[in-house]
Amino acid sequence: MSTFHQDVEAAIPALRRYARALTRDAETADDLVQDTLVRALRSEHLFHGGDVRSWLYTILTNLNRNRLRSLARRPTLTPIEDHDAADAAGPEAGGRDIERALALLVDEQREALLLVVLEGLTYREVAEVQGVPIGTVMSRLARARAQIKSYLDGERPALRRIK
Amino acid sequence: MVDQTPVTEYELHLHVDGELPAGRREAVEAWLATHPEDAARVAAWRAQAEEIRTRFGDVSQEAVPNRLKLQSIMRTRRSWGAIAAAATVAAFLIGGVAGWFARGASAAAPDQVQVFTADALGAHRLYIGEVRHPIEVKAEEAHLLPWLSRRLGTTLRAPDLGAFGLKLLGGRLLPGPNGPAALIMYEGANGERFTLYCSKIEAQRSAFRYEDNNNFGSVRWIEGNYGWALSGPKDRTRLKAIAGAAYEQMEKAAPQRSSATQLLSRRGS
Image (tube, rainbow over all chains, first blue to last red; front, side):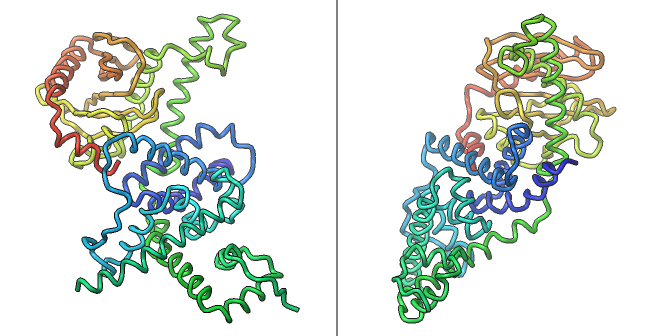
């Protein structure tokens, strides 16, 4: 197996993790990873050195954007700006809170945050994946964090009142 | 001497993410010690990151499913690559010397219908030979058809070929010339296997066409932007009969697409 193939293979578990957090749906996530791998192998000749992992994150990120774009043309499945969290299972549901908070973010902000905190990419690497300057990555991160914070701060007292 | 320049919000992010230049680390820490609001924000951001890692970190420890293993993806790719190479050779022979200069370019791209049939037969040959993993998702798994439908962008049905002694085994997703392709496999009592291949195609609607190579035969038809190919042992009469039954069942089902099926196929997409 070539170094390229070894590098791709080594990245699969991390790609699945990133895809799962991006989509919050196991099946859709693995579909995305599969598409990413097919695409990567098909374009191997286009890969001229550099970090295979970042390149794979880039492909996956773009495929996910395509997916969301095609979803947007269909009837809405769930309202995105769903601040009425009273029907949620509450903090007892563990990871549910953070999932809902992630769901509220603009796609580019969610990508940036997950690439940094979950995948451990540097700001520079995220800038390459997203194809934007580092300053844009920083403001996306800042906005993502502020929004998650206000969501989590706002939600918990409301739930306590209900109990 | 610690740098006394006021700390910006961006520096707080850099601090949380370990990207702060060494010269500013002490300054930021000193700042946080005297600015409880900023310290609280930083703590909240760290807690968020921790929650995200707790929630999703385990995914990378899970065993990688078979369909995502590089070996299986490469196997699929290789067969497709071989077909594409064969098709390029054919185009080259037809195109003569001009084809040589156009190789690798779109001019060398063979007719879509030919590629489609070659793909269908290639997939058939490759996967019916598989003993352990001829299919990716078993027929018993309820998500087989919704999943394939979702990936192909149409409502896919597996015709009942019980009348021909064929039982549905399951299916798999493949890279086709125009995006994803689906392969559904059937098995007879004595182990003979038939496959139904479906993929998007930009070609005229067409009636049944029979084609075969050394080992297998295939009946292909095109309907509503999708091509279908039923492949199996080289027996023209039998293949046409089975293809006819499959076509009829799918046509019958088509007009009254139940909303339940459509909803199901949209699930999770």
